[in-house]
Length: 396
Image (tube, rainbow, N blue to C red):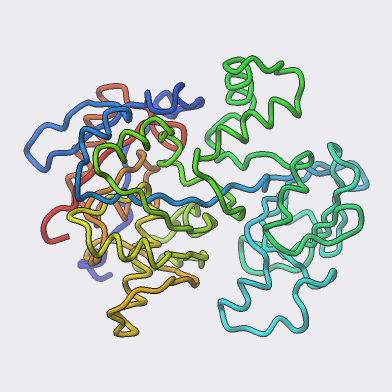
């Protein structure tokens, strides 16, 4: 065994279940913010509402404007067995990204138009038809295995196949917000419904309230199977205050999928295989970042979009700016070079996750001190939890 290789055991830490937020902060910008000031200096305990006082003229704040689909579909077999499908991305697009031939039009029924996670996958044979109890017009046909985790599926609404993300709103009644497995959907749904005066017994209205809260206030482009959770904290009030303080708000779009939330199961970091995710960085965002004194990314997905675009420009030896879009499997871990991002607003992440490895690459092993401080001080962790504001360490 090579002793120089990075062991994933370095990214273990004790995360008690009581520290995992089950309900988001209300209002959004009341979430706590641990503002890092560097190694050997105690961090500041602030709130998201304080962010405008921590950034100023010459700064650019970049957000991921992707929109979460109602991607989780509770279904049943015709025989009555319970199943669940989590839609990830249109499969034909992924095949184009990988440079593979689909063997025909991948959007046709029978070829499997979507990549998905299917549960219980081992008990569902190819060709099995799954029916939605919430919307009898929706059915899913499970197709072949794509790899160890994913299956190809066809999704039909009134017999018409869904072939792209712009059709995702058609699944609003059958589907629901794809919350991560460590959040109890009933707890979150009931609490959010109560907050806004929605009858929690009205299941459709309560699910819609949860889905709305699992979107950023600036979400624009359908396609993601999970929220870019750092952005859930931002409000129109905070964004307005940032602009008033001379901070430019710029956007990217990275479709959040398996590459973001798949656990790292390998023993060594270099053995982890990233899945591809689609991204787009507008020319105006690139120009703003080039001119900025400091670029702060909201969330790890924004970091990966910006750094992927920078690498694409570097590899093409481009000096001008244009919209850059494509597919990325960029895996940022210890030793990675950051070409664009100076600061990062991010949540607290799971042990052994690729997101935690990115934090380690960004600020070094100091992340462990910050996590220990946050746990000791009662910060709430993971998707509905609190946040950190980090500055890239010199040499990172």
